[in-house]
Image (tube, rainbow, N blue to C red):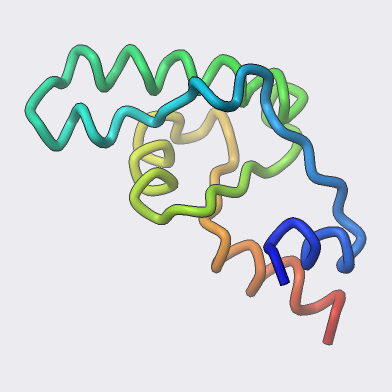
Length: 97
């Protein structure tokens, strides 16, 4: 079962940001020491996630922990970022249990 199907089963709508295919948290650039490029990519992602999450009102779930970790550091206090395991534990399981 895909995560999206599991989220929907728990009653959550799944919203994707615009231009999803071209987005990146910047982690691959940061790991190579290209911090300026990494920060530019995470800023681009933050702007589109802000729109998709209604200005941070909705939680944002990442399916990769390294990306979730990087974005948590970059947007601390502005957007609610969770990796998929956190979201499943905290929000999905109580509704499906």
